[in-house]
Length: 257
Image 1 (cartoon, rainbow, N blue to C red):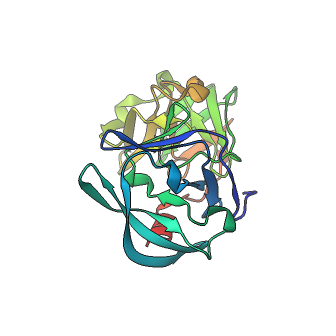
Image 2 (tube, rainbow, N blue to C red; image 1 turned 135 degrees about the vertical axis):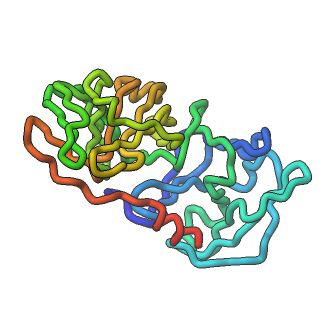
């Protein structure tokens, strides 16, 4: 990643957040702050809060880049505790006095008029979807689950390459639908997840699809991808080494305490 922890820069996009059906903040003056190399945090000027009142919870703590004071948000008579924090004087100078909200405390986030999921989009991340003529074969426990002559390969900065396959090349007798749903700031919300059962085991939630991805990733609509970390991927009959598992949960626990 090319951006160091603690780096600050202006957000060139309008940022809005909604809670309880109300627009809590609406700003064209937000700033990015990187708390880890993967993606930034939005920092909102206090004067750009549209609804609600910040309530000091009298608790300061040292986060990754400096001290911050926890605040709740009083909105329409409802107090949302621990909704975010205000950056104090040991934080990077560009965000002192700014508010950062917990992502999960805000019901809907928007960059301009487009909803954003999971976390802010990193301006230094590229997500490219390219049609490829390399044969992709997926095996689990030695059983062939998919064998596709073409795919759409998705290259996302800092993450493993994903191979999206047309459904006609998948052995659906081995696929078990689940109720899992996930979101991605670049691709949108999944429309389906599947486990794979073989003669020896059931492998939970190893495949997914976006039937209605964001417009930028429209070429993967309806196609199915597998976690390369848990299945064997052969590209033109050559086994692709399994990538290391990328897990942001541990970082989130460290960041928020």
